Length: 158
Image (cartoon, rainbow, N blue to C red; front, side):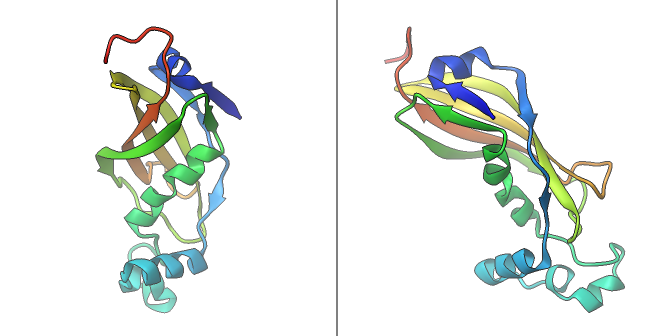
């Protein structure tokens, strides 16, 4: 497990791949729960029998399910210490180049692609590529923004 120790350490890692997560199995029960929570019961996600006749040969995860797994996948790669708090700031770009079949496993490859100083801390962009054992193409590529708040050894932003 990689430890990012504070804002200064995050700056030192700009442009670096932080690692690759553990594999996580995509289960139909999780997809059904996600469908219930989001009220998105499109048959391609929840109707196993009907989905068998689809071009995918079975149910596929919602794109937003795959996207929502990013924080969990990140947590198996790195942790951040030495900050007062971190906040999800949003996303700059998200794409779903391939579907995520139910029953497949996914993992994330994370690059700390950009970091900018902000008052009280830093805004970090993690470019996260979610891979599937069922596809050569990634199933999600996202530029995920997080703000880390905490002291810096030398700060130019007030």
